Length: 436
Ligand code: ATP
Ligand code: MG
Image (cartoon, rainbow, N blue to C red; front, side, top):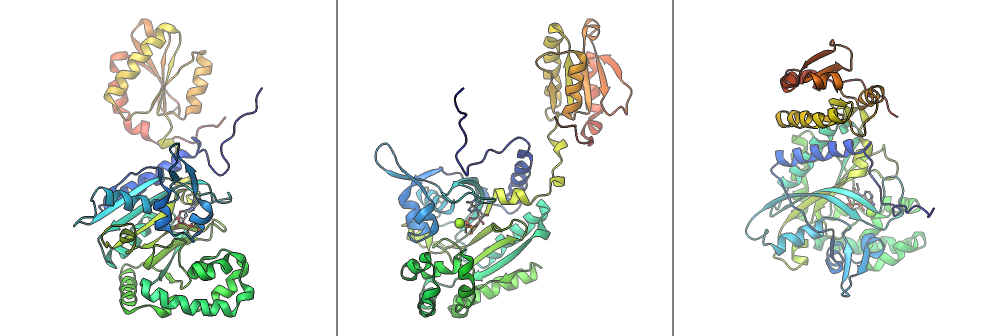
């Protein structure tokens, strides 16, 4: 036998056991977006490489070493999207969505980064992202933070996460701070790692984002960015803080929070957890007022964030997810070919009148005993049995798999009505079905 082909390292299969959790997160997210009046946008998984270079920044981890870049058959350089913001801005500009109007948007989908795979860090991972255009803030900054806080409650993880907040100021104030930071880092040149030495010239702020534990003491003692804010940014930040205070959202100002992408200015924030080890950031974002212009558009204020699906999913308690919501409610047994053919007919009729009913029709034949075993394992509340006897008399037998109700045999024409009246029972939670 030839060797089995495996998935690419760092790109995960999400198996049926786990998809209910993913669906739960997606459902809560969609619900949240509707509640705040945000609209979905979808854009391609592949874009021109140039788009990411120009937006994320040449001297960032993502562009320097993480992008999946390849040549198309006609020689164009293309890249699998490493994040959503750049493509979202590109799509909005291309279709005139930023012209004399505001936008509140969300997206969801896979992103690709060639990172070292480990728990919470993958090469294909999913992000839920939100962007708002044309709002100078800080009102929309506060709105976004409030909506994330609400999502943690909906997902039952509010106790596991905390908010970190910072302001990067305007690009001018950052420039002034940059000189101060470089002077400090040069004083401690011998403590810099290779990445930092390289970035000292090209992008010194990036050094503050270093994940190298040996760099942390040096970074900790560095001059603080927020002590060098311009007046407008300082005021913006103060108003944001007071809006959050008024909303009862607690946060910690982290002066070293700079984010891993170059396009941010003013507000940046991260939601972090201690429960996932080193990969503790579940949601990150900020203001990127300069990006639209940088990509060739008219100056447009913007604010957004993205959440890592895998990290969110692994924070959610299994108890939050009722597997029963996905299990079949009715299992239909059919004994013999003639019964099977009638069972199809009846099952379709049930689905016509109860479109939300989860009905599993036995396929592949089998004895009464083996079909009944499958019915039990499925987690269904009721088994419908159609054997020779029932078939001859146009009847059907209904067995309550919890044993609570008596088994009964009714006319087939009564089946829909029976299931309709038993709807509350069907929906009641059954103990977890036996696995195996
Ligand atoms: P990190 O500091 O963890 O590398 P980042 O700053 O690169 O994150 P962003 O580009 O801001 O992250 O992406 C937003 C969110 O997407 C992160 O907070 C995280 O939850 C998730 N994320 C980013 N990269 C990965 C990855 N390789 N695998 C899984 N999730 C990821
Ligand atoms: Mg990263």
